[in-house]
Image (cartoon, rainbow, N blue to C red):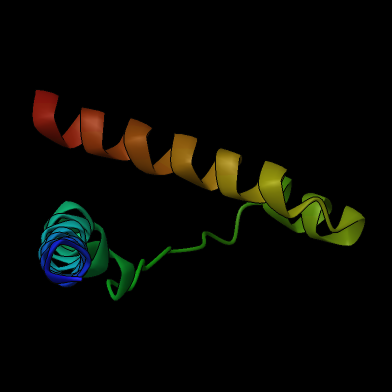
Length: 81
């Protein structure tokens, strides 16, 4: 009876300690992800002819890719100047 009581106390202690360690590790692992999840991404849309034609097709991924390309090209030009 005493052995059963000691084993159950030992197992419960190990369970609660392990649970707390895993929770702490999970929280620290996803801490950076939580910091990025609330960030707003601002996309500046240009009034170019290419993007207005794409909006008619509702190909949003293509629109984002084209706008990103234009933005990166403009940033590259500014860095070179």
